[in-house]
Image: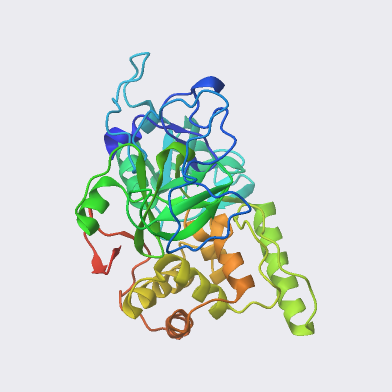
Length: 397
């Protein structure tokens, strides 16, 4: 993916945008009032039999073609920018290389005031370098960190490839997630505007399904299975985790204390996400770690075997135990750029609906008790393209 990443630009907020900036007229979603492959609000949907009769491209403006295929990569991207500067993406990017939490300070000195923290898998934009220190921007956090705990250049890009995720966001009202790349195919589910779906790239798709897609379709992960969506009405970003300011840490801790107090008293309307930790929906007060973890397991591996579900739970618990990550189940799950269903609100919706499978609940409880079938693994992705413990469609490392 190094050739792909060279065509991205760092935004400093945990996302990397595909390609060069385009005008409003040229954007993929320009002038589109409805989603291709979408459902009218009045239609009564049978997900298994939904047809293609309303699958029409509706335009009231110009919908430009995407700069890259939407199945996970801009394969044709050149590493040289238009101005001749080679690999400027790698020059801007910084990633952490820590086994513990890294202090970020107001000045390039160990005696300077601490302004926040970086964790494992965090990235950001280089603002300045001086005397073995780097001033960086990572989410809301801006400050200085010691170079010996950071990665730069090719090393940073390689780390980003490992820990970042290609995310497809739905740009219209409703989008069908189909079982095959065809408007005649059956439907897994419906994605709403703003929903985030993890992209299955070409290598992963060939590994799991043995097929290649044309530019009209994108492959996405749906609870461990491969789903297909129209590429015309998604926007793809490359997302990764970012650091926290001291204010964000304090807000997160206060929210956790208030949630615990609400749970003890039986009161409260739901805990809100702390700044810097993404959560597109409220989690009811008193929601147990087991319920939260079970919901995430179902979103990530609901269609996998029990062993695959347990493995996802073990990854979360391993992170909680590690000094390199936040120390609660909630903060690990809602860390920005890490677990897509949490940031998009899917986890919260699943908890609210109460439709968590018994196997996912069992897997969550077993993982929380300390059981792991993936050793100390702290990451997983769709299998294909990297080494690790392969269980079903996922690889763990």
